[in-house]
Length: 468
Image 1 (cartoon, rainbow, N blue to C red):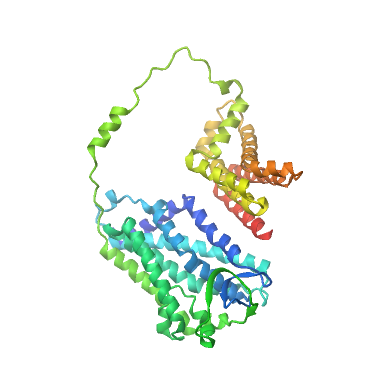
Image 2: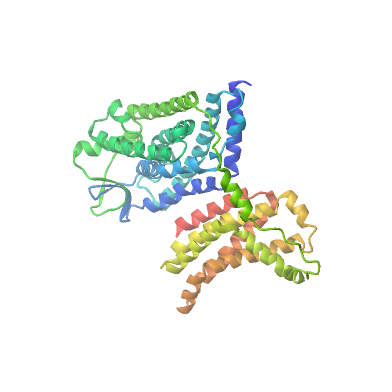
């Protein structure tokens, strides 16, 4: 098998596993939501970049650079955690490593899949930036190219570097576990220190190569005016007004673009080194006594009674289907734990509209769209048609169950509001649950998949959250 065929197979299989992972949607959401939290309008009292208590005048380039900083520095650890813990973390190495396939091709295929997913996250962030520009209204009117340039130049090379480091750490047995995570954390801290030190080193190519995150060079003009300036990155209070910073000119500087391309090239070299240094896995030695203890303590089979009566829910089929749908929407301990967290937020939060409602809505979007996709799959739909309840009735009961979950999760806020004579929380829960459940079941029945409903609902959720 040629190296190209191995790389294509590795790329395709990894990308397919990414597509089936719910964690991908979390990755696509984290950066846009964070953007709304850190970036404010011209007249608001906080910003993602604060210089001696002053925020840069909000231009399209400043908005794009703020997005780039959020991705390339503030969310970088989260991106690495996602790459190390998503569905592709377990590979069929027992089969792959016994073949004569090129290890370099295998690594490059997985590296390419990581880049494709991270590129999709950057595209989602770019779209969010364009929507955000319409909300915060930059002084130059919002230029899509400047926003995209300020985001992609800092963020794309460093995301490539993270993907390459992930492959390098996964290639060596000592760094495949916790030690690899610790090593990345140390590298992240060192890179931050070097980037801060390079801020006063001028605007040459060498100074740019010291900043893997890519956000110091566009702000270098500030340090030329005052080397002891206090720069704060992240959500910080603005107490001294605004300051003009020509970020756009620095972003388009040939030296800066050359340094970002150089870091992108270094990441490709690291992926190549990962393929060269790749070492096979070793089968862990199993402890035989543990299995013997488990077998000794397992429950003995019990004969089923022959005179058992019919199951209780079978006497009321509609109620039985509703109970089943209600239980399958949030199955398992992890989903229920997230539900408890959302309900706790509704109980402790003061502003249901801005805090608890978005969390409950996001949880139900993933849960309802996933269950609708499972229920409307071709094989499952053929099986459900043999039941006593018609598929359309089951879909209606699915919507009712979704509304019930929304009301249940929002119950603390609803009860508190009713005590004050306020029905806003109840209205949001009823309407939100009906919309999410209805869109999920309609698009699930149309597409036989959870993806269209999830995408549409996430766009609507983000627009609703940022608009109000």
